[in-house]
Length: 307
Image (tube, rainbow, N blue to C red; front, side, top):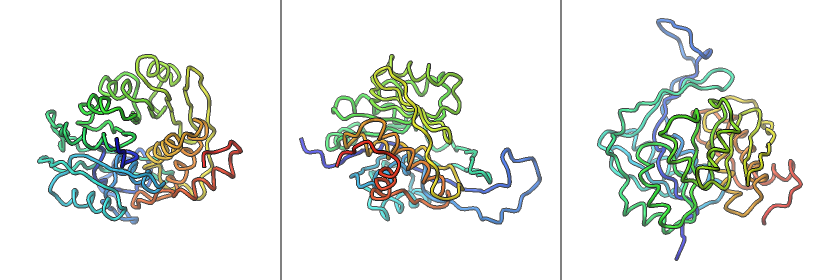
């Protein structure tokens, strides 16, 4: 069977309105003057993962529901400009959107507009099956309606990854994603007991690798019951924004994993890409390239890599 795509990304397409604020939490006031500007740009979690994968040389195809609206045009333009294949399923409710408040230290508060999806939304099974059968791997965002595509993906034989983001370990919405993926990413930010949650994912699901990112504290990997730590990587420039750091980590980790690299080196790739993303303003969509990633990895690690 021909596999013309390295990674099929499902879901997570949309636009964000970026607002830089003087502090977070933002104290109540009747108004604030925003000298840095307010900008709406394409790029939510699936867009950033697809962008990161493509920048690393992986043949990437993104599929999601988009509205026939200016926001959808921004998403289509982002993919066109970066040479990323996009299958846009019509979404009558409109393209997903959010407002991100970003503080001086790069932390963010995201406000998601949930009115842009419906409970009965579905990505067409025939479309997902055809795209998956021509791909090696599928990265599934936790946005509606991607959970319904998981059984179809599994039937096609592709490996699956997902990012649970700031899952608290309890919300049942995340469980189908957590237990069906071969590689599971999540943030440790909302977890009271990260190791216990990671082990539960591995025991109840089919994950070969569970990765919990912890920002400036690095990341933890659970593989074959063994928990290891990946130290953080110093950003190559001042930190301006944490938006997209987790997506960059996932894309770079998958780049190594699909090349057959050891998990520790995959995590190093992820840490490098995540640190790079923190130096890029949310108003931009610039991902680390393959040559820069590999060069930085050679400086930081002596583990042999796959050529």
